[in-house]
Image (cartoon, rainbow, N blue to C red):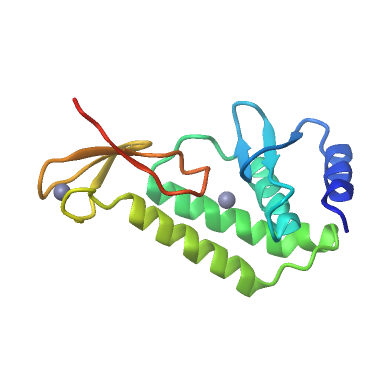
Length: 153
Ligand SMILES: [Zn+2]
Ligand SMILES: [Zn+2]
């Protein structure tokens, strides 16, 4: 099924949610918008996954512990409800792998750029290393790319 068809169906079923093409798959609670990358592989799966975040009313800013729980909730809804409803083939294994790589990504983003110790999250995208005192910012957890910026206070 071309991604456009599924987007049209979702847009008709959920008039309160906007669906817009973007660079990444992402749910923005403040904009009530699901962004999707039509060029990515497995787009339908991720489109449904982002919809699950929307339906579960997940907010934009959470600490890592919350993120993992919400990510797992969203995958659960994707597999048990949305996949069937929209006739998209999503296996539990696929969902587990996505969740695993997300966990891994969170783990890496919390690593100190100076000494490699896992830091403490102080705010949504701010971390502090207890070993060397270094502070850094990671990019938004809604976007799955790893970037770390050192904070020069
Ligand atoms: Zn997610
Ligand atoms: Zn450090």
